[in-house]
Image (cartoon, rainbow, N blue to C red):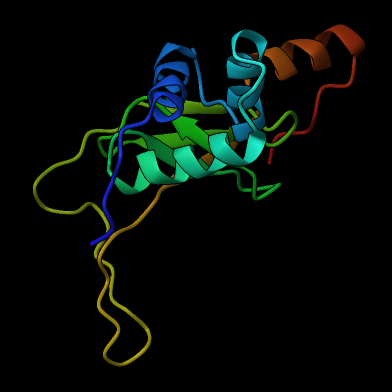
Length: 141
């Protein structure tokens, strides 16, 4: 197993994720840190985000539309919602029981399922409000 060092840059990255309200992208985190520590590189922030995620200290969700990674101060398992209009990622309150709500079976023979990620898609309040204001309300499916 690779030695996991706790460097000042890693702790700055962790603190920036913890302080952010929402689900920031790596670029968001970089801008926060670079505004106070101009010598930090974008590559260092990206590397530390990956390391913090691998260590289980932060969560990560990949946007449905863009494929962009967003980071989460909550590392425990939980569900997310994705706005189809603006790409915003939010937490969704869903109860997990000890027995799964959905029974999943691998389609490929011998494939062992070890994890899952559930992301709901929709339109956030801000985007709905903009639609109402602009008179461009969508037709509900």
